[in-house]
Length: 145
Ligand SMILES: CC(C)(COP(=O)(O)OP(=O)(O)OC[C@H]1O[C@@H](n2cnc3c(N)ncnc32)[C@H](O)[C@@H]1OP(=O)(O)O)[C@@H](O)C(=O)NCCC(=O)NCCS
Image 1 (cartoon, rainbow, N blue to C red):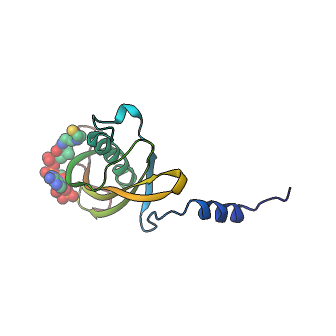
Image 2 (tube, rainbow, N blue to C red; image 1 turned 90 degrees about the horizontal axis):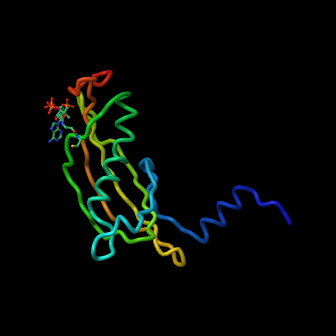
């Protein structure tokens, strides 16, 4: 059997699973919800998605702050589409603002669904602000501020 190069393999995967995921922001987390994360309608509970967004949003601020951070504010949170069991969720983040002690991140969440006819849906978007904190939990200036 002839050997397949990684380029050929990627092309084959792209053909069967065309994705429209963003390339202007960083993938910070991927997760698939479980039955325990569903609400009474069988869709995924909004609070679970908010918790995942908080975790995913912290990735870039934690790198920038090089230490402890705390979530200070969720300034916008939009559930654009319901999330269903079996959706693979991808969290993409972009730093919007770096202040003296705070970092604000925009997070977009995309669901890859229906493996038989794969498509990608933007399900959630949020702006979350994190503050660098010291050992006592007080705001700590970011290096360079
Ligand atoms: C985060 C915390 C240490 C900030 O302390 P604070 O005394 O409110 O700090 P400040 O008022 O000096 O604000 C610190 C930064 O947060 C920003 N900030 C405060 N409230 C904000 C809001 N509602 N939206 C956006 N940014 C906000 C300020 O603008 C400031 O940013 P800058 O230094 O870059 O200009 C404190 O509020 C806290 O401990 N909160 C609980 C955090 C937590 O437990 N989170 C987990 C969820 S429960």
